[in-house]
Each structure stands twice: as C-alpha cells, then as structure tokens.
Amino acid sequence: MRTKIEVREVAKGFASDQGRLDVIESVSFSVREGEFVAIVGPSGCGKTTLLNLLAGFLRPDAGVVLIDGAPRPRPDARGILISQQGSVFPWLTVRENLMFGLNGRAPAKTAAIADHYADIVGLKGFEDSYPHELSGGMLKRAELARALVVKPETLYMDEPFSALDALLSLRMRSELLRILAQERHTVLLITHDVEEAIHLADRILVLSERPARVRAAFDVPLSHPRRLASAAAQELRIAVLRELGVDEAAG
Image (cartoon, rainbow, N blue to C red; front, top):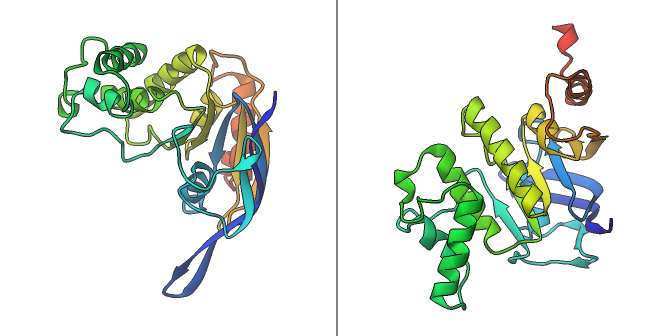
C-alpha cells in the first residue's frame, strides 16, 4: 500500500505575549493510503495544530508535509476537515447543506447525490429538515455526509464526537466504521479518548507534551467489529495510557 501522507521533521510555533511558543517540534511519520491513524496526546500538546498542518490550513515553520509525494500549500476538496465545532449551515436543510459543496453541476444531479449520501449516513427521510430539527447524533451524521459528498481522499477529524454522550459517541463510531467499509478513505483522527482510538484506528500515534514529538506508535492488530473489553484491547489500552503518563495500576 503506497504512502499517502508523509510528515518530515515538521515544527510549528506561534508568537505570544511571553515570546515564541513552540507547539510542534521535529515531528515525523507517514500514513498509508486507506489507513486509519488516530493521534492521541496530552491536552494542549498541539494535536489540533498538527491536524491543521496536515489539512493545509497552516504552514510549517520547518520541515515539510507531503500528500501523494508533493506539498499541498492550501486546503482543497481532496482533504476535508471535520472539526469539533461542526460545519453545517443552520439556515439550510440537510439536502441543501450537502448540495452546497457540489457547485457547477446540474441541480437535479446534485440533489440526487445529496440524497444518496443522506441515505448512506442514515438520514433518509430527513433531507428537508433543518439542523435545529435534528438530534445531536443526526447532526453529526449530517456533518459527516457533508464531508463525504465531495468524495475526499482524506478525512481529517478533530475530536468530532467529543461533545456527545458516551452511548451516542459509541454509536457514531460504529456508524463511521460502517460508512468507511463502503467508501474507503484515508483518515487522521485527533482524539483524547484512548478507547475511541483503539475502536477505530489501524494505528495509534502518541504525542508528547508540548512542544509535541511522536513519543510512540502502536499498531492495532484487531479485526472489526472490535471488543473493547477483550484482553488484547485492554493490554493495548494500558500500553497507550502508560505512554501518556497514566499508570492505572499505580492508582
């Protein structure tokens, strides 16, 4: 499987009232095409900054991010960012939100494509609903459909389910896996939830405290559907937590 994303010795910092704040320092890793990689790390370590660098919203101060072997200096439809804040327009219906990114095509065709993706995420029958008429889980599905409808090669996901309760988050993870089984994408997920990373990812990268470096990497050799209570999943969870400085046995 070929390399989709390559990060070489990337560093990023920002000016602050106290001087320069180094956020990311000499980060290197690669992601294969179609791979699902989760990135975990301490709060404030620079996870979102790293994702914005990958998606093209920020430029590195040093090093390079290569997508398909070439720099991508700005965001484009080949890579879509799904953030914590959400991305649907409240004044548009589900169908209209999904059609928004399909400019330049015949209206009848864009409506058919929008309805197809509404169906894929389980929103069939709600195409004419407005965001305020949807439940939290349905709204997240609409956001996911809005990202998928432009057929991106890569999904950049910044804690997309963090605002949901535990049960709804679990359901949305399962929904995401179902969709990815139909439409294969390369996925980069930022999460603070180690169990979420184990549930979804093919590989987990652990970042250090700021300025962030890649502290450890773990393959997740578990087939789907995954039993998070299994001995293998729990052993991996403990190993990742230890890299994050959490030793449950010591508690």
